[in-house]
Length: 96
Image (cartoon, rainbow, N blue to C red):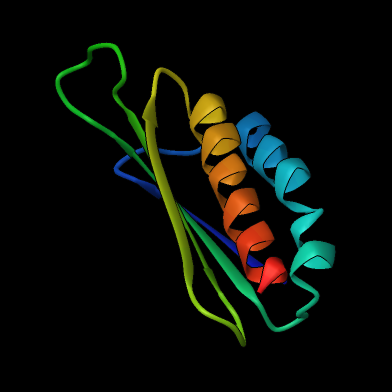
């Protein structure tokens, strides 16, 4: 699975990049598609307030496109909740 991380208007910390890679590794097995692509786009919403980290995750493969987006206090929280939403979408597809 190809993973693309797109931080918008900021430099991503190596710690955050490792966190994302660790959290997304299991999706290669779940999707069962080596040509699948996962794109993660992260944006900081101005002005700096609570809930100003916006995370979007899009998965492309042989099946339907899956998409999840969350706005949270941190990118780690946004990644976690968006991946939970993707888990629910994958379960729905497997039940069909």
